[in-house]
Each structure stands twice: as C-alpha cells, then as structure tokens.
Length: 114
Length: 109
Image 1 (cartoon, rainbow over the protein chains, first blue to last red):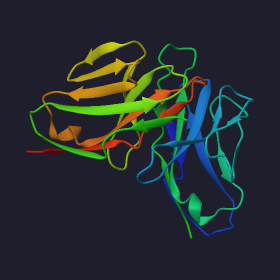
Image 2: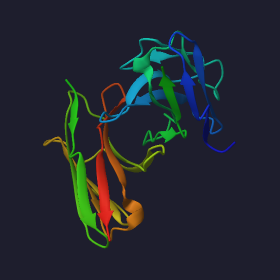
Image 3: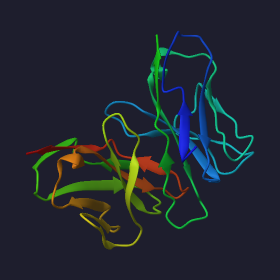
Image 4: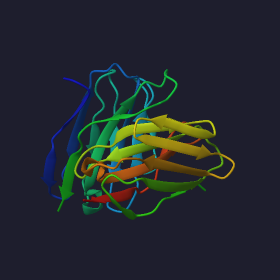
C-alpha cells in the first residue's frame, strides 16, 4: 500500500441498504477525513478523526457514522442509504503535527443509491 | 458565515498565462490552499499561503491578501495537462478546510 486506498471504487446500492466504505492509509497520519463531492459544490466534510479513538462531526454528518479503532483505518458507514447520498466519497489524511496541514486524498468511491 | 467565491470556468491557450481568482469570507483564518483536481480523480495539493504575499513553485504561483480576503493562483506556460479544476480552500479557526466549488480550466491548443 502506498498512500491512501479506498474500497470499493464504485457501488450501486438499493435504498435502505447498509453500506460501509473502507479507507486505509499507510503514512501514519494522525488525522483522517471523509468528504463527499457533488456536482457544482465544494467538497463537504462528513466526519473527521484527529487521532485514533476519537471522531467528530463535519458539515454534513446526518445518515453517516465512522469509527477509528486504529491509526490506519477509517471506515464510513451508511446505516440506511437514501438517494440523496448518491455522490463521490473521498477519504483523506493529514499529519496535523506538521506546519502546512496538507491533506492527501484516496482515489474516491462513486456511490449510486437507487 | 463562511463563503468562497471563484469563477466556475475559464479558458486559456496553451503556452499562455492564466490567473484564477478567489475571494473568501470567514471569521477565523488559518491559511489558504489551492488544490488541483483532474476529472474523475482525487484533489492534489498545489500550494499553501498563510502570510500575505506571493509563493512561487515552478510554473505555479499563489498570492494571498488576508485584509482583502483574496487569493489568486497564477499558472504560467500553460500545458494541455493543466486542464483541470482548481479548488480554492481556506482553513477556518477550527483547522477545518472549507472548499470552494472549483474553477474548471480548459486549455486550448
């Protein structure tokens, strides 16, 4: 693994189903983030984690949950998917002990909820 | 509230120079980023400004004026591979990133 990986790459999901998007990083970054990107809008933060064992809510957390059991993994769960959750989901990480706070992104998961 | 404005789309010619402007409104500020995003791909970091002035990095430069809530990204010697969206992003007082919708830059031969 080099950087951040996400799985699956894309998924079509029936409304009401539960879905977990996976994210793994091997850079030992302390902070991780989940964003969604919709056409014509900027990336919107769903949830974040500043360090293993802690999580926080972003701008659009409703309908989503996260966990951070260890440094490397930060899964995002949709408990009961709805069509408005159709989007491209990006996971990112950063080393918040640095001076620039640059975020590194995974390749994204394209999710369609029907 | 917090807000970012940047043009939706710009067109430029290969070999030319283009400036992408960004204005922002926020009560707390911890720096401004520019990211590049090619279609279908993830954003990648281009630049970071926390103090007023110009930061130059190869063909790309980024400028910040905190008093005016204004930044621009300057791309020189444009290449076809520069066709992408350019995202203006600021870091708020809670160290969270607030993202603009991006400027789609189209490069023509």
